[in-house]
Image 1 (tube, rainbow, N blue to C red):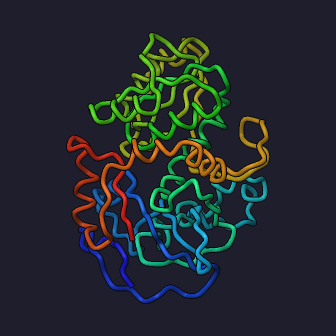
Image 2 (cartoon, rainbow, N blue to C red):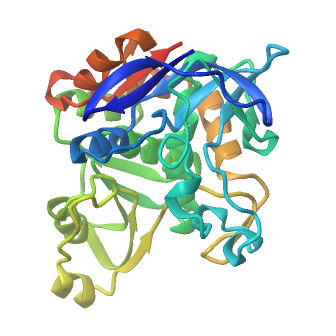
Image 3 (tube, one colour):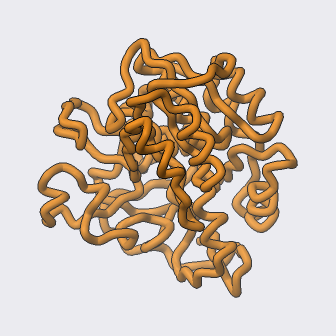
Length: 319
């Protein structure tokens, strides 16, 4: 079967054996290119695995599912506490990073990874459940609530998903984006005009420049949620951060129901909540998905995804 892999620092579609029949088979229908995929490729990390941690597909009975791409050990202290996103296995548990992912024709996964989709979500759009779940997790841990005013720095996929997740709990959102097509997408999702300061700010860009801007937007005593990935490290505006007593909440991946880091409880997993948001708001897919290509066009798809100035937000494979 086909699989998208990194070969000599280049993206190629290669032929690989069918996976071992362990778990439940998912015939892939959609897979998204994440900014993390682009960074891994740019850094030249020699990953032997199939790319893709944003994907959805069909079971053998025709049921549509999104796949939570984590394989935690289930036995370490963090897994037992319900915080399996922090499993001691680290990145080895992430499909598409530490093991084979979903940019392929089919994959076998444990039943616990499956999130059933309603008819309100076309499976061709359901790869978006994963980045929405990333945002849901940060919104929950940051304690964002109804009536909050939230500024989001970064208008890429995670920033726009954060806007949708914050709005879902009743917050008013302003998105700061670098490119005009990102601004237009944010407006489609209901972003309002920027104000001077906010009680909640979310950095979805993952750069020191964005972090500086995010802290400048924080009101005294504000909460700053870090959803962006700091691949190049970070420089923190320490004086402003401390003088304002900003509460910093780092966030990573997603987890299940139960007690969250902030002490609050919830009955649904971050992935289930993300699927519910996408079902209620089909315009999220219309705003985010800018390109759809076949799996055979993987090299071109990665080139498009890496050129934000050309209008790409989310590039999706339809398998």
